[in-house]
Amino acid sequence: MAFQIPRGTQDLLPGETEKWQYVEQVARDLCRRYGYEEIRTPIFEHTELFLRGVGDTTDIVQKEMYTFEDKGGRALTLRPEGTAPVVRAFVEHKLYGSPNQPVKLYYAGPMFRYERPEAGRFRQFVQFGVEAIGSSDPAIDAEVMALAMHIYKALGLKHIRLVINSLGDVDSRRAHREALVRHFSDRIHELCPDCQARLETNPLRILDCKKDRDHELMASAPSILDYLNDESRAYFEKVKQYLTMLDIPFVIDSRLVRGLDYYNHTTFEIMSEAEGFGAAATLCGGGRYNGLVQEIGGPETPGIGFALSIERLLAALEAEGIELPIHRGIDCYVVAVGERAKDETVRLVYELRRAGLRVEQDYLGRKMKAQLKAADRLGASFVAIIGDEELEKQTAAVKHMASGEQTDVPLGELASFLIERTKREE
Image 1 (cartoon, rainbow, N blue to C red):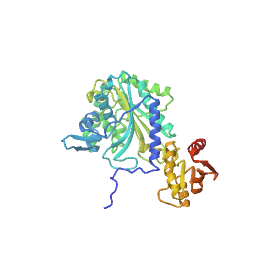
Image 2 (spheres, rainbow, N blue to C red; image 1 turned 90 degrees about the vertical axis):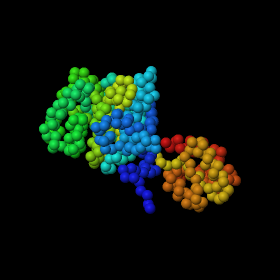
Image 3 (tube, rainbow, N blue to C red; image 1 turned 60 degrees about the vertical axis):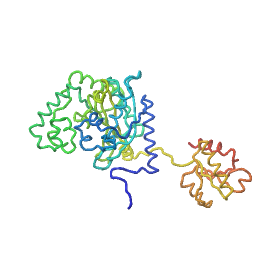
Image 4 (tube, rainbow, N blue to C red; image 1 turned 135 degrees about the horizontal axis):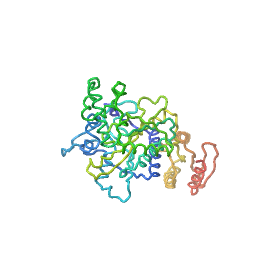
């Protein structure tokens, strides 16, 4: 039988992986500039972590998790998101005791959700995220959003929009919850079964429903902004003040609640407004989670973070017609003519690679003409030709592929010659 890739996953082949490496490296470099350090957590965790951390009323927990039982009878889950594992590591390793606070971390890796595959949505997908744990200063909220926007801007995206909201503190959310129950109760039967179930468990999630988003009850639902107490309102005003000071445009959407239970105060999304991008316009989402550390067993510790989809980032770049500066060529292709030359080439190629050059040679016993064609297909900047005559003189005939210029170079000087010339062309 012919095996095929599982539905909702993708193979990333050479030519594509370089794009992934490039955008991830840009994000990593900016994280370091902002003082964030990398953390790596397991791909699977105990299921209870996500039940407690993500929330048992979320779609992720109720419908989308890949959960299995191991040979010891333990319930394990492939991570559906990155924040809960990072906070678990923060608590387990007592990072709250570090003298450097807040603890600023970033991560990158695959996540897994059993969703209906469609454009921009996979069952295995890659997230790049940051978490700043240990500060309730509105300035760190602004910093986290600024970092996310900086990543997109550094990659050249222009048609993006930052959308923000406040979910307030516990008291504000309680008052808003009661208002939502009153608003939806009499007509809840008009909404989908999920919304009906959420009325008592988590009515705020009704506003996040994709099926009933255009129902008139959604448009007239009470706004959380009308139920913010003085402290929550002051916090949100400070966040907006800092974003304005950083010259980061934003719009306020009182219906932005995000899909996870642990958010409070600031929530935000970054949307693509590129023409033809499609329905999956959300590139990045995040917010503040002041109670999550306690929920996972740690001390009272505030936190904020975001996660962005690498798949959607690349799709947004494509939608805006942005070409990444990726060079897939090699520095030199060493052409061997004859058996004696082939023996010398094996040693020479190794030495050139040790000198830091990207070098290739023939492994199929091809004639000189075929080797030159291979060098051209690989995008070689130079070709070094070695035959019997070159071996006698201990030189290589080095050809610059773009200009056709050819120079005899002593074998002992070949590495330095190529290094100098390739640097000159960068």
